[in-house]
Image (tube, rainbow, N blue to C red; front, side):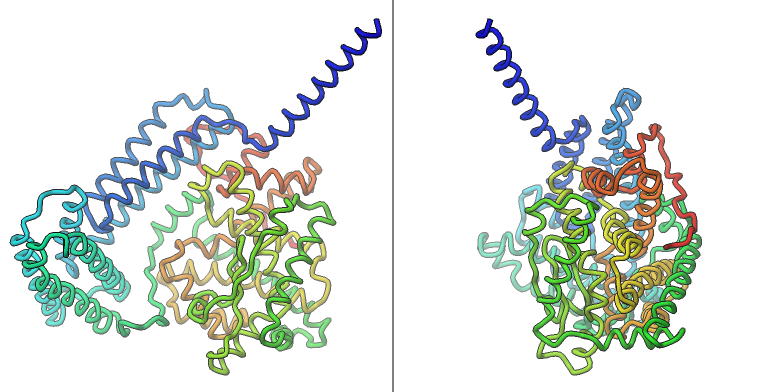
Amino acid sequence: MKRLIALVLLLAFCLQISAQTGDELAAYNDSPSRLRGVIEKYNEDYGILDRFYSAPTSPNRLARFRQLDADWLALLDRQNFDALNAEEQVDYILFRNYLNRAQRERDRFAGQLEEMRPLIPFARSISDLEDARRRLEPLDPAKAAAGLNELARQIAAVQKDVEAGAVPKPKRTVANRAARTVGSLRQTLQRWFTFYNGYDPLFTWWNAEPYKAADAALQNYQTFLLDKLVGIRADDKTTIIGDPIGRAALVAELDYEMIPYTPEELVGIANKEFAWCEAEMKKASREMGYGDDWKRALEAVKQKYVEPGKQPALIKELAYEAIDYVEKNDLVTVPPVARDGWRMEMMTPERQLVAPFFLGGEMIQVSYPTSGMTHEQKMMSMRGNNPFFSHATVFHELIPGHHLQGFMADRYRPYRQTFRTPFSIEGWALYWEFLLWDKGFQKTPEQRVGALFWRMHRCARIIFSLNFHLEKMTPQEAVDFLVERVGHERDNATAEVRRSFSGDYGPLYQIAYMMGGLQFYNLHRELVDSKKMTDRQFHDAILREGQIPVEMIRAILTKQKLAKDFRTNWRFYDGADRK
């Protein structure tokens, strides 16, 4: 009998160990979605085609990608949506939304090429050379030389026509886009020439001089476009031009990002939030002894910068203050590797022209003056990166902001990074500015001034970026707006606007901070303030779903029933007072 009891106890122990092992392993794995393999294969197909069709202006590239989108949309259409599980339905909607948007963007790009055609009628001849090279078609060196000779002649002729007014004068923004495209075409031609040059002696004999002439013609024409039509020097890295997309494209982008508001409504929300910030600024200003003149309080805060060489130590201190705070208050799980694995680098003076504060993620990049800057540049940088401004931005960039979110996105449902959106990425980081404000993380009036400065900045970004794309505001007016309404240093304001309109960020990127933050903030009210989830449960759950549109995260957490033809409908802004 004793042996039987011992055997039963041993069996029970083994089963318990097995269950614990299974539970532990389950924590390392996502719930399965059959769409994951579909999305990953699409990305591989896209990647190989993107590398093959290396001429950006090629009509063949455009046609092949249109076919790719259509093929994968057809696959989705063949699926029984109702037979998919909840995870798969979310992935289905995200993927279909992504492909539909890709089709729209290709149409928009084709429209931009058509708009530039009078300025670059020779583009097709260059992209055809690269396409033929990619297909490894036989090349006749003598014919290639004749083609290059004709190309140089055609470029020179177009330049003369533009100068003589025979070509209708384009908008400055279109001319700037055309100049950038000429630079891209020059790179395409260089790749084509380099492939053959020296490896095929007959090619080099025929084409060395014609290529030099064609390359020089492209370079001269790009300089001409910038000088005569755009009004800047070819080496100008400071003037801001931009390329407004117009209201229709803005509305289409908002639909893709699942933001069911018009551009005008979003500007209205930004103005309302800005008014709240000004009221709070006045409260902090009174505590500092400046009455309602909050700009004097702001100036006093800016003067409290650290001396050169001390900024890295300050950033480290602020980073661990925030990490300790979220852990001590049980707000979110911080994996030890994430806590200890982030890095810091200083930004170059050139990089600070577009990023005058911080860039974040696993590596926080810090802006602070270098010895070679002018005195005015040094002072603006130190004033704009004072400890109180930094107090509200270091955690935005690291933990619990960008670094923690990126760390988790790499480990849970990484295939969803195809659908990552700034409304989730920047929205998450800004949401923590909202939440930590509510929880009293900013203890002094100076810290509150620093936090409010950034919140006002996010409001201003919505106002100036949407008005720019609606062609109601110029880049210079945007700079003035940041200086006069928010209190930016002028160089820093210029860098912010340059970053917004340089083409490296999408047209909605700057509105994504505040609007994405408001989405997460509203969702926190819905699920945490109602006691359906704790702070830690809420935040940990979000971090495991990927950097996808917030409305989709809401659908997952609330177990919302989804339809195949889902359209955005969550009017998340209720205008409720902040704490």
